[in-house]
Image (cartoon, rainbow, N blue to C red; front, side):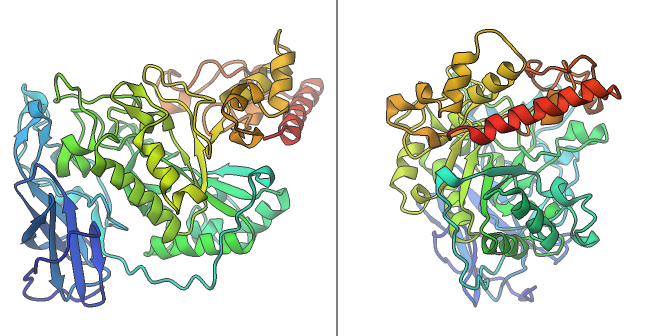
Amino acid sequence: MAAIPRRLSPWAGRAYPLGATWDGEGVNFALYSEHARHVKVCIFDEQGREEIAQVPLPARTDNVWHGYIRGLGPGIVYGYRVFGPYEPNRGLRFNPNKLLIDPYARALAGSFAWDDSHFGYCIGNPAGDLSFDERDNAQFAYKCRVVDSQFDWEGDKHPRTSWRDTIIYELNVKGFTKLHPKVPEEQRGTYAGLSSQAAIRHLKRIGITAVELMPVHAFLDERNLIEKGLRNYWGYNTIAFFAPEPRYGATVDPVNEFKTMVKRLHAAGIEVILDVVYNHTAEGNHNGPSLSLRGVDNSTYYRLVYENPRYYMDYTGCGNTLNVMNPRALQLIMDSLRYWVLEMHVDGFRFDLAAALARESHGVDQLAGFFDIIHQDPVLSQVKLIAEPWDLGEGGYQLGNFPAGWSEWNGQYRDNVRGFWRSDEGLCQPFSRRLTGSSDLYQHKGRGPCASINMITSHDGFTLRDLVSYNHKHNEANQDGNRDGDNNNISWNCGIEGPAGEHLVCRLRSQQQRNMLASLLLSHG
């Protein structure tokens, strides 16, 4: 970590690029906030425990607050305090008592612990989120760390596997190697573990061409889960769109560890696709905490109810929705995507609840700015783009309606194949369509079979073994009364619910699994 100068006297610096950028002599800080009155960057010790200084950013250009501090360098730990009106009824929720994560932070520092001080309002106050909380949350909050972007890629190149030859393996970075006996113990459950010789040997042996990593953007465990002694294992609760999840690091430098993982996978001919969650953040609804975007500029980054901007439009079921109609919010997403391609060398993205990103004023729009910018971008238009083609809002099911250049998780493929092998009636013709590329879904737009991402199972719902072992879901371990998850898994237990010792049942289950796998491997798409 660079030594912190005794005097932190900021120059005006530059309004671009956003985030904290080291140039070899100092660090330039730039933060967009249209409605803020002023902004301070807070410098911490190396562990992020003690706040050493608060430095006002001296310049403002086109609503970007910026300043340059000579002598700072990689490793410096920082956060923001943003000053402005706290008027929730107008959609403004500034509270300088809350240390905020830089939306462009490349790495997080320290650890996060839930505490009432994270909330901009006083929990328990009869006025609810209209009240104002003066407690400081810094000791419990994530901080940001300045990074050195230099890395020896050793001539790394994208494999650029054609769509027709692509076989995607979805995995969770932690779960994939956490119990793997041939992965070094200190690397299990990490980026390093995923790129270990044992992991790569297994991936090559089973014949896949790409790994699709469940969310690796830094995320939070929801407070209600922590109080139950549980975790958000899958990671669909993002808090920082540029920073790799620090808990997946085997070292103190998850950024370079992630790059090393990508380099090693590429050397083995394996592409890296990221499952990205740009539709919402971990800040939740109006009763949620102020951790980053809400405190930086709430009405810029989130879609608010037009008639009452105290509340959030929720097309995601997670409390909020990013406001892609705002150019700066859309820029945040695009800058993040480019960063992961250009700096981290990933090969594509699977967009969680992608329909939410295409919502304009009147619902999902195939001509949305989100699509236009990606198609015109010389970087993003050349990587693999996969949509989960639905969200939870009205008109959100858009399977088959995404533009050329996109592939889609084919939910009808999943359902038709499951139903066919369960012997449901009337599925012979739909099943044949799925095997031959789902032309009924994609041909009307001139899209070929590779627009369909064929799948039978994913992280949502049953595993392949579950499909042949249970007629009903059994999510008791989540302590939510088995209410979470889809009740309609189109499964068949082959005669006995749950584990079975009976030979004929086990044999039938094994055959059913092979039937579905054969269907998947022989299908166009």
